[in-house]
Length: 621
Image 1 (cartoon, one colour):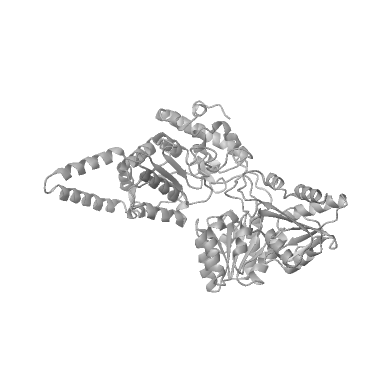
Image 2 (tube, helix red, strand yellow; image 1 turned 90 degrees about the horizontal axis):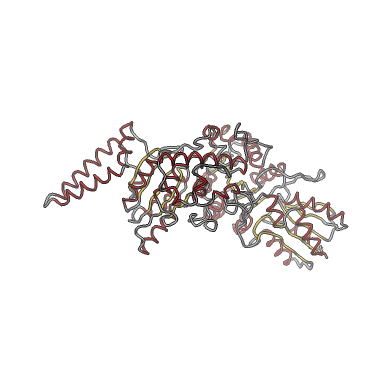
């Protein structure tokens, strides 16, 4: 924790309300220093947070949190919010096991109104809060949604805007625009008028004029309407009407989001409207740190880095990059192959594909449901779409997988990145649910490779050996070392070790590497174990079940939730085939798992080699 002139004295938002403008800017610089120093050690979302420092300070200066409720979309840009709401003394623990979250969590602090981690939800949540306040009679309270321009590519944001625009509730949407303009503006006059319209003096003059005209007998209302019509006509000449105004919102902006004083004035103006308002602010992603400003994509979510050089030690090949490389090789020889992703071109390893096959690459924005349904159209007309999504975000496209892909027997491959634990991003980002919810999708085939070689084999099998909807799921990070005598395969299952052993470990994906280590250590304890490795986890091949039936003990280890799991399906198939032995399933319980390193998470859940050995040894005793 640094020694700062002002930041050290901030224990709650109330402490900034009496600061002078000069002190506010000093505070902003101190916050930037703290952000850079902390994220350089812990990793995290740096560029988004550097871009929202002044905006966050202005929000807490103008509004009375938590009485006024600020909802952060995704929440990855809420680090300054955390520093201003009593968490400065614990900020060094952000994203660490037992520390504060890198996202908003109500259980962590009363100023975190809604839990977050996925995009485009803030407007709907904030509107619900605002409507509840109206119903309960809290007409002097405000609900504020802070949403980025990228999140506006998500359909849920528009559903919220469409529903909220017709209300008269105290809802304010702050659009943090750090990339593109929402509506095209015409020249310097347009920007001048935007700023002028945003100032409190403008609204006071407008309201006083309308009030005066309406009081004139007989012709007052007509004069008021006439003046309003002239104003609207002139405004359309200089400033095109925005979609937000068409949907019922008052629109203020765009304004400089790094001008604390101006942002504060505009937010005060928004409060005075007493109806839904959009405040459009322009910010610079990575503001104040040159490496992040120059390369906001890499510094969006980043591992620990060197502050002086900006070097974040880009490491070895990972599954995402390997997937992208394999898909490029396949696409060179097959013109039907298309790649679709949802604002994750870099994260899913598709930068190379986007450059080599631009006409067959589609980044649809933060719209996972649209990605799948769009891909169904590509498929219907003879192309082979490969849709690359993080496991945690695939949840948002469940109906489309069911209704638009599987039910229509369309050929499509879902590349499920970040399957299993992801580490420090925590409960909203772990990919531990897909093995369960995909089990309910009829006729779906799911592969789970344990190495880069298997990733290629399984991807090709999904494209060429299967009809209908397929998925290949793989973890974050790199591959684990596997035994030299193990042969990668796209067959439905593999038996590794002594096939005649009467103790079996059944597992798949990343855990196979841990099972191989456990097998060696157990052998040293004179415990003979075989591993039944599921390469295809849906449908489970009956041969894998038969390989386990004669065993006295079967231990299934799964990096996913227990309810509806692959392990549950395997147990059911064992019982249907008259299994007489003992069966134990180790998986994640009925809970959301918090943040920690992947190694720690696997260990705590008993899913690493040590956990497997402990479970097997204690059961056999």
